[in-house]
Amino acid sequence: MRLANTRSIEPGAILAKTIYNESGVILVNKGVALTKQFLDRLVKHGITYIYIEDEEMKDIAAMPTISKSLRREASETIKEVFLSLQHNGLTNRSYILDQKGSELSVIVQQITNELQQNEQSLSLLTDMIVSDNYIFQHSLNVAIYALAIGVKLKLSNKQLEEIGMAAMLHDVGKLFINPDILQKPGKLTEEEFKIIQNHTRTGYRFLVGQDSVPFVVLLCALQHHERLDGSGYPLGITSESIHKYAKLIGIADVFDAVTSNRVYRDAMLPHEGLEILYAGSGQLYDREMIEALKSSIVVYPNGIMVDLNDGRQGIVVKQNPHVCDRPIIRINKEQGRKLAKPYDVNLANVLNVVVFSCKID
Image 1 (cartoon, rainbow, N blue to C red):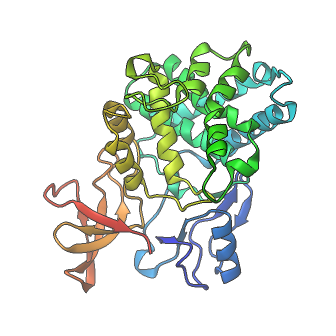
Image 2 (cartoon, helix red, strand yellow):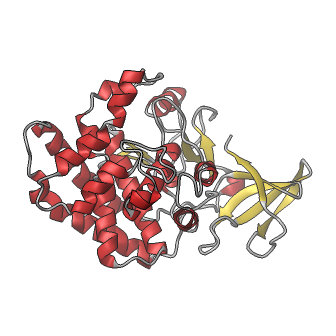
């Protein structure tokens, strides 16, 4: 199978990986021939990339790093908690987190255990999920990325539990913003942008007084948009005043935001998300944390087409678990000429060859 852009797939292509909703219910099973109407629906729902069958690449697989059962359980728990918070409203002080906080903690521990025991790198791009609410899936994804960074930095289990909880609740303030503003497809007005920015203060104020929520979780809700050089918000504080967890969650937040499907733009690919982070390394974001993220994720997902610096082209067929940006490539073109017999090259063994560019048709 190969990874393809839903906007360029021809009707009749066969879906190679099942698409689920956020509750784990199958929406479209693999093996189904895709119609134009269904492809249009996927685009409307913000699904930028899907896997389709390709006879030349039938041995390529894309395995989830987090098990389907855990992702389903985590999604349902976050959705239930967040909807309860929304329904109670911002002015009606709710203590749902005091009642449900233990459930979120269990989810954090389960995700941490899977990350610690699984040698595979993270590739959330391969999770074909249609979600009705961006905040739910974003909160879960940020928690997964943040925990992966924490595991790579060898933080203690107690620190990882705090980071996971803080990541799941970092955007809680957005629950109380008008959805028309959050999901606006066009450019925000200055007033709307200020409302969006205020979610950090709103989340902090809402979490104050929740007995089950550690103070560091409140700080992360407030500070995850602060930047090392003081250019962030809401306080404009600099590196020494930003909590370590908030710096870490800020990186996970940016990476998931740019590599996720949004109503106003297509998802970027993982290497493009990393480029954004590296562009701000040392000035906006902590470099060691960016490196930890890079070494935790799949930079070039299976099924993606790549150009190598020596003029060869091919498809990523497999990952090297401990060298996340040097996968195994099936070479099918040399200097623009298609090969009758493609062959595999392991970039971990040929250090003078690198990925020059990549694309998804």
